[in-house]
Length: 351
Image (cartoon, rainbow, N blue to C red; front, side):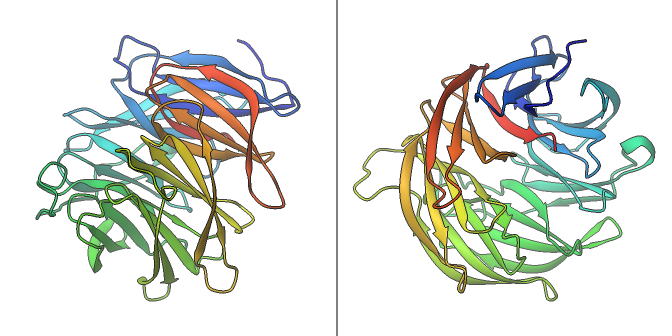
């Protein structure tokens, strides 16, 4: 088995691939040079699109984004990061597109885009999954006949307290807060976004007081004040993800906050860019600073790697592109390297 050097950062990449093709890749980025390489890969899963590591890093959870959705559990070899299949469970929903793990590692949460439903699975021995403890199916529709003909749960994210699970439903223009009561999801609050927004992904600020949602259809970010004791969001701001004067079609995709809490990034498909916002440290509101080309097409996902690296998965140009983050102002500079990879859609650092 090929080993990795101490100056390399490891990360997994999920892709759209058939079960007989390599679908999950372990990759490495050299912290000194920025060069990337594929360490190993594995087959056996249809569309292993979204991935999540458990808190101790020993298990990788993978959704199979198909009509018969599944969650697969892989045990990760600590020495080689090689994956070994341990378990798989049906989500009883179509096209699971997001998976997350609570901070205590006790619960795995999934969202099924096409069927508009969300799941909870208890985590048992060795990271395997018990029988599904919650399946909630949303109902309703939004104003966009093409994209909001029904519910489309696009993400489910535990809040910092672990008491709540927050769902962005693109089809309903809603952010739904559930209480996680020992694996049961109990509706706590429902918050409407502006009609036609299409909320997609949510991130919490490191201070847990603020949260940010990227709205796919309106190409906006919404900034919120978050009261984690009450599980309540208060809207602070809506701001465009696109540069002024942009006239082309496109949809926004992913969103991340820097560990220092001063910068927020969001990706635009169509414009094929990453927008940098500065976060006001008093109010939590955003100021757009610059747009950087992703040097590829359709930046569906990106993530922040140790060492101040922002790594973009360009789905339709089949490449990963790395950028160095300036520690002072958060601006991005391409480090000169790309990694060719077929239809990459999710990046998860091994930390």
